[in-house]
Length: 283
Ligand code: 13P
Image (cartoon, rainbow, N blue to C red; front, side, top):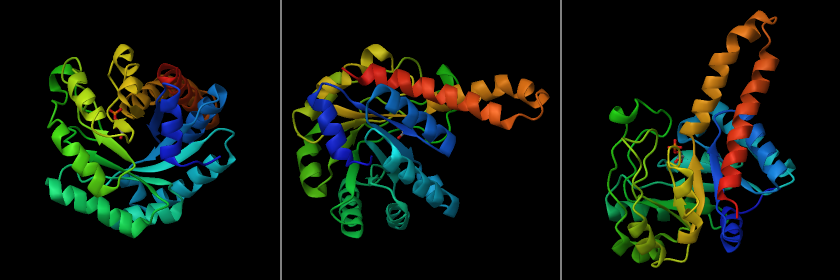
């Protein structure tokens, strides 16, 4: 069943849990994520990348994900991730997205606020808006290099801006930069729990942690206690699927060009990853 993102996340936080969100470039991954959520009896969030939503195929994928969400036995939300373009936001919502991250984090502070407010006026009150304050380094769709070539932390969220930002944007969720990055970390991730704590006392809206791939489980389990109700994964999910495909491809080619079997391996890899994330974030 579909649900509102803020309702799903708030209900999870009341139980001391956070809800994982997974980037879905394709329907096979989305089926695996929703299957894992149904097995766990937990809600889940399907993220659509803006580069996906910016194409007619991507809009059809959103419509398919919405059908999947409607048919699921657990609450499922379809969210457009990291959008900066108002037309892409409007198209994604028309195609079936329930929620949008109106991401003005790379803009000056006042322009960031203006983008979220414009998104609200274009999308209306029924669409749940996430906003982002603070710069998150890294590429959202591709992860390069190992430790030494990984991504260094960009600007942290300025906790002094949080109250004003939340009040003026009207966002229902707030994505923060507390040492998290997209893609691979440069060295060990050093999450700034002190900054997160400072943010958490300044707003009641749920916080969102992007760039969860590579953050140790022992750190991620602390998130919900700091009002982080949504945790975004992409890179680790891709790594697992691509490794499974690489390993399984020769045998499946030899087995009569068995694409159906290979897709089954894809599903298993994504499902196992989603199951472990759901378990890790659930109290
Ligand atoms: P990772 O690719 O680092 O897992 O981050 C995903 C993300 O934050 C999607 O919004």
